[in-house]
Amino acid sequence: MTSTSIGFAVLEGQSSLEGVRRGLPLENLSTKEGPALLSLKDGCRSLLIPIAADRPARSDRRSAGVHLYRLQLMEAGHTVDYVCIECRKSHLHDLFDLLIADVVKAAAEDPERPDLIASAVLDRWRELLDREPRSAPTPEVLRGIWGELWHARSIARLGRQDLMYWTGHKHAIWDLIGDRHAIEAKTITNRATWSIRIASELQLNDATMPLVLSVLRVDAGGDEGESIADLVDDLNKAGVDPSELVQALAACGLDWHQIEPTRSIKFVLLEHRAWLVDPTFPRIIPASFVGGGLPTHVTRIEYEIDLTTRLDAALSNELWNAILSGIAK
Picture 1 (cartoon, rainbow, N blue to C red):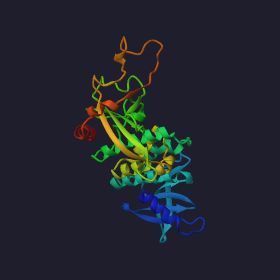
Picture 2: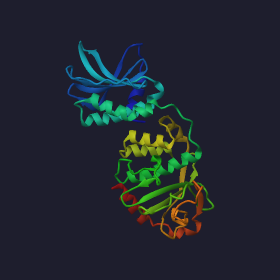
Picture 3: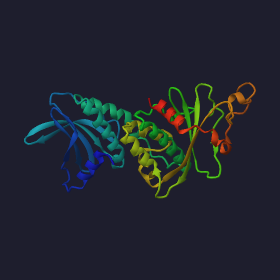
């Protein structure tokens, strides 16, 4: 739960008459005109950032769920001007809390034009705000997302706060790409073998840069282990931009409103192994075929490899950590 969601919960726990606006000052955001406020009126959550009366303020009502506009309130007998970011649909509350946290962080660094900052943040979140709800991802998809988030958290803990290296959801060949290595991440549940499904002849092709296949063996944890929501919490604590993370998850097939329900779906990491994909590694790549590509009329291949007898060829923890550190730089 974010500090803004806690603040809104406090306001919602207070009794109020219809049409009465309640406010709660924010300790971490203020302008020359005073502190910003979390505000609640008739069930609508909003962030109010004070601005000078003679300062222009941009408005934006293109998204049905969140509006940006100038608001004037009477306080202690005089008028106070605010930039108001208002959530107009209750089902967007969780996403709005993340959006507000994004605005607060940016405006605290540059409080002179909060309207421009709020407008820029709203533009970044607009696609998610306007998207129609999708069905829940399959267990296999959730397991794959968990594995990629596990890798992202490992990199974030080494100091990297952006997610530009996380590329699997962008239709790239590999899941994570650094300056010196790429990582293809797999998450399996098979306890008997290290059998891994490979999606295409390109997935283990190391023609352009050194490639590492990283495999997590997990078990459904029940009350044990960690959920996707837990990993998201850890990434947020590590300083990863919430909007970047939520948008990356949406591209993976997990929408913002589906994150919290995953808290009950936990995985226990049993083992982790990683292999450098070199010429001796079992794989099918374009060079495996005559002519350097798939045969005529064959448009796609999918296959499995079994690495059970190659466990002793896995990278040492030292080499694995060095590869992660290289991506984290």
